[in-house]
Length: 119
Length: 114
Image (cartoon, rainbow over all chains, first blue to last red; front, top):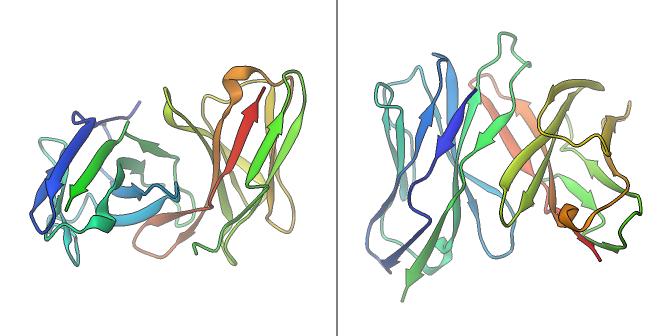
């Protein structure tokens, strides 16, 4: 069974600074996807970024980027130029890729990291 | 707005009761997932449906059941409710965009069992 671990329950960062959130996962699969989701105080779950395991290039979405180390099973999220609106719970998630185009497996979430951006 | 609609937003009920949570997926999405988020358990996967059929099952209690209808909306039924069932219940839908699945979440139903 796959597991996702986030070892930092809480983190804080000064506005405009850079912060890195850690995530490790355990799987025997070779073909899968990794995600970072954000849950602000509104409690809405928002997809931040996605990485395909077969791609060596790290995904980037504006101020958000990942450091994907497949051999180490590590998937960290870097937030640059932190903004007050980045204050949220961040969840790392894993999904095994299915064998059919529309047949995918459930998404497994880590326990989350609560990030506070300080003015 | 994710395009996934969940009703009701809040539900307060008593122990032993039964409730139904409803989810309408994004237009064109065939998969619906149900998750439970509680303070001590994090986000727990309950069940997934794809085009009306059960596809994957997580740690869903026997008191809970779900189904996906021909119009693709889904309902999660919770019966014999206990205090510990109080949680935020999320529905998510997904589309395969050719390079990987993305989950789009509804705003959740906050269930309080008193």
